[in-house]
Image (cartoon, rainbow over all chains, first blue to last red; front, side, top):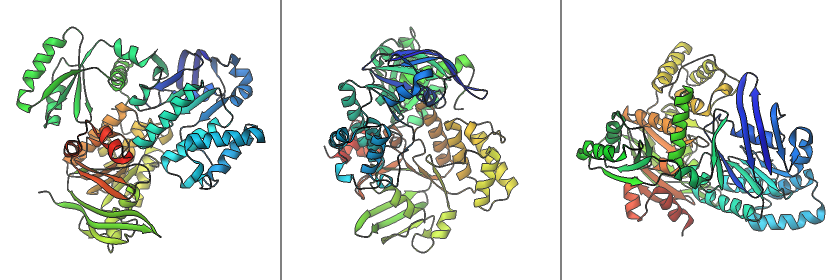
Length: 312
Length: 242
């Protein structure tokens, strides 16, 4: 469905993407994760022909985007990062506008809109102005507009930005349904629980793809032990752990600390940490790492390799 | 007990026949990190706008930093710093121009504003390069710069509206380190978020739905009371009603 070879992109002197190679088969739900300015938005915009290609080649539906971007764009649904519908148009007017833009015939339009209304539960709001919708409903409308021409490929750039947990769950149920009906999806997200719902994810950092794999392989092949620590005095515990010279990383996860123990030394270090934390009523529990553990670990390694500290 | 910073009883706000906030009761102390959670449209923004002196309440009583929220709204505005991820900084300005702009709004001397910004940015672990354009900065940097701008007039209360929306896990943690440090220094912080792990970092929080507070307390108390494993589960349980 998507074939990317040797893709690089610069904004002036600023490199955004560096030698990206990626192949996404038809029917996949593919996640793009990485810190801000890793190149996720640039990659998505290049895929649908919204940015002119500089170096490298991209083909979508086996068509070269460089020469056939108009044909490709007509068959792709794209939901940009920030809400970009017309706030002064109603829900229905926005849908009609996008239907006409993509040349959907009147006959098809009626049936498609009925289908999208049922799917998004937006019908009772069809006369409401888009600007007056809640955050979750705005995203559902934007998704519906991106689907109005029945695209074979759907590109979504951080679609759940600023959306509450309930609406986020509903939104992902919609994405999984679209994917189940055969549509290929590429989604970028800063939420690692969403990354775990993708069939494969690509981890981006500073314009490079560090890894592409299924979430379960990424987690399974990461051979480090993670220990979750709980304590009523968690911030003191954090200081103790941070001062320990042999521990690779220590991150807050809500009301827990996740500490990564280096391979081979896990057993000894666990006993060591347990002893050091005795005065703090701490409980230590080895756990199966999640995508967020993996993400933070990769970002830390990448920062060490390039000698850059992204976020101070 | 620490000094009272935000207090209200039976606070409400109607828009015509629609009740956006119904019977809000708060007692937030100096140095607390207090979270406002709820789905979009639950009334969080209306509640916060009343507490910031931006919106006249329809009923109830309350005070912020000792000023009455009905009659002393102008004084309240001077006691707080406000930051939102949705709009924070003008992309075409440089770091220096942004600081001068915010300093000007708060009526600060330009040199003083710039010096304070340099101090705060250094404390946040950022290199204060004043010449860079905002649009060339990574989101994590921008976000901490926006926070620095909201602190220029040294307000006792900070109101952060979804400060980490669209921010990656690493940058979110760096931002919360800063929030914790500010609370340790005695700033009171009101924060809204859709990240449920961040809800755990609040000392206390409330969850709103349809204008009503459906839960309020310490994260650990709330989880125990509702038999939830984590905040995500608690939120889904209280808000979606299943």
